Image 1 (tube, rainbow, N blue to C red):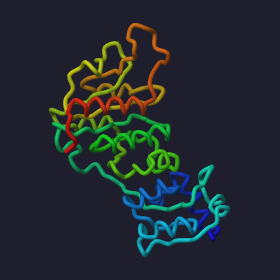
Image 2 (cartoon, rainbow, N blue to C red):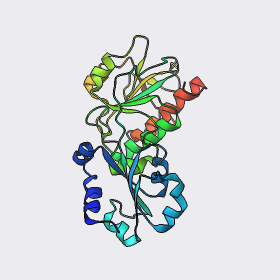
Image 3 (cartoon, helix red, strand yellow):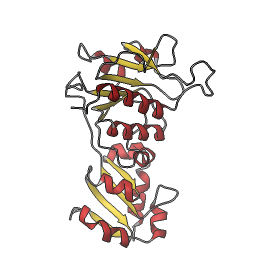
Image 4 (cartoon, rainbow, N blue to C red):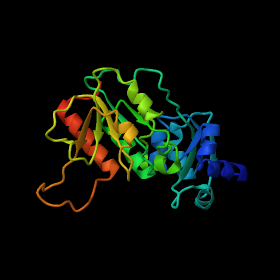
Length: 263
């Protein structure tokens, strides 16, 4: 049975203030929790007897566990449709104290300028893991990667790629010479990503869902790219792509050109 205090703790972690104070976050559901157990330190699990029996091997002996009924899980859950397990994990905090580009010839870093939709951010974290992105650098007003909605959207990909929050203009000022900073823009002066010459590494800036890349960050771009619609001789049915989809297309094109894994 989940105590009232433990339920209160779980619900408090829906708020960034308490996640920051405690350095804890919530994961829910078999897929997410089982993936997170390989990456983060778990402090508490409430799960059905069936889930605990099947996954006991994944748990450290010091993890506090409680067997709960589906009804108890529903009362404690932050999700509309809870599934078998809720877990509390310790956050990983990455600092910008090491060279962010260790090999400019093949390393790609994503820089996210005010990405606010949790679903988009979770998707981008999954994309980064799939394409072997070295790191993700987020503006301070980008959504929190440890919010429950982002964690669920990553489907366990959170923690696979280092994520750092820092002002992007200052970060881009510190980029080593020879590292190209790209930005994706809907701009007539931008280069078609499928025709432009691309380096095998660099920094790719993705902008806000509604406003794109801010003027302060845009001033630091070396080159701007756009993803053309097809067919190119007709008016597009939509104004722009979802930022998660645009990130996937952009990373895929860079990796296709390099034709080798990140090192």
